[in-house]
Length: 345
Picture (cartoon, one colour):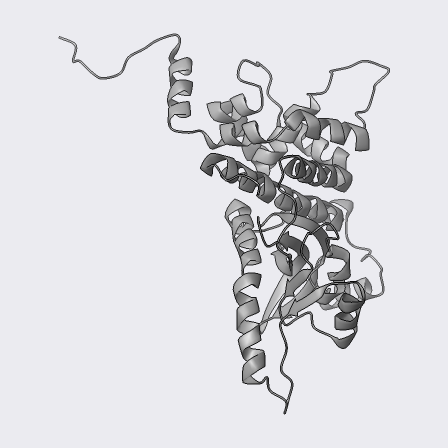
């Protein structure tokens, strides 16, 4: 006698599984309902038009589908190979990308080609497109602006002493083959923070105090000092004139610039040798720190999406990855607001 078991078979099993996924609250459904991906795709096609082949050939996948794939790739920290596998394996991914009933799925090469085709300009179009949708929903920049920077690590490079000398002279070692050159990141730089050495890039952001959305970004290499990006990330659209920043940003010139442009400086003071901070200044720093710390929440969210690690080679691709980090953070935060019922006010 055949033993009974709990497994039930049905040709419509996939539909039952999708219903269960919805009951368990698929986070991708929340993201889809709060962002107009068709608009993002239109922005990319405007900035980086799709190539037209006169000789025919296989038509490309829709830009909207590829944008959704790039969002999934960043949110879940997937490589191109893993992205291809997950699109084949996960029902929620296929539904989110509009591929639930598609026979052909974008493979790793298709994802890599699209990402490199749109480049940094395409990533910026996605970031700006998400920002414009935030504004349409009423989430304008309020309460002041918080400025800070975070280090984004990249795979460390190994060079011999002779290779370092040649690279300092902006010469490529003659024994490097083209394949080896492509695997060497010559753009990332070293820097020290809190006594520890770091290798990679830097992402400077401007976050509004009210909603904690990232409003402005600047990407650079790790050795560039945080303060050099200060004026470039100022958000003129913020309704409040307070600007919060840590002790890496103060200077007499900057204080004068802020005053001349109508801003109120909320930059923490920095003590100097033989001139420590007074108790009043320490108290002011403490009050500012409570507000300035909000930007660390965004960096922590990026850490959860992929440890802020750059897997690519070169600054162009690193800029693409860092811009997508900021865009996907805003996208996820907007989905959180919609899920919890938080409205703009």
